[in-house]
Image (cartoon, rainbow, N blue to C red; front, side, top):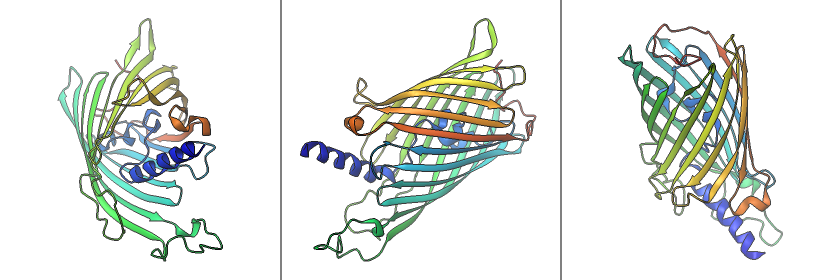
Length: 324
């Protein structure tokens, strides 16, 4: 039993150590919101799009990670877009909040073959806080650490850059997040300062033969952390069905693993959602398959969204509801 408890503590500490390296990305980006993973997707649609996500990880474990975020992006000209994201992320006694402001420009490489190239840039501001008011104390030890007399926090500024290529139904995005090292002078002890991480997101949208208003979209999402050389991969597949009003429902599944342990998934689970007029809803469940599996009921992600101002751009580089 002691070994199990030690493993749980180790996993929690490891997640806390890596929490500031990157906000938790599970399946939010699959809720028809690619802007989650890269600034290059800002304004890529032909509307003003808002997505709000609520993520609860490891349900059943006290003080497990919890995240809320809001993403909004829209066109400001025929071939440019802007976006903003706000987030609140807690993990035990640590909390980080912040915002990103993004700009993207979309180029037409070839009008007839529908090839497009997008460039994206985000400015990020992040605050990371340790809340000592929640520390557990005893009569014999009224102060957990005499060296810590107030809440510790640090604010950081950083940037993301990205590149996106599209060719009809195919897309590939390459992104670098937190390109600047972090200032850790206000903390005592060992703390990561290299926050740089890379993401590759790629997929293809196929028309279902014999049904011009149904699509299948396999995709993959790869993350690589420069600080400790960790990397992981998501393998996803989605089915999407439109009606004549461009409303749709979709369903899919996602499978995540560390790249040195392909046959040992971290989590796997189903996804589903729908869009009716301007309203969007999505839900994802991820079953934990590592050592914590016996102590939690999985991770839940709920997405609510709204799409406004349909047709704000006449540029062919926008995403059409149904691919030709």
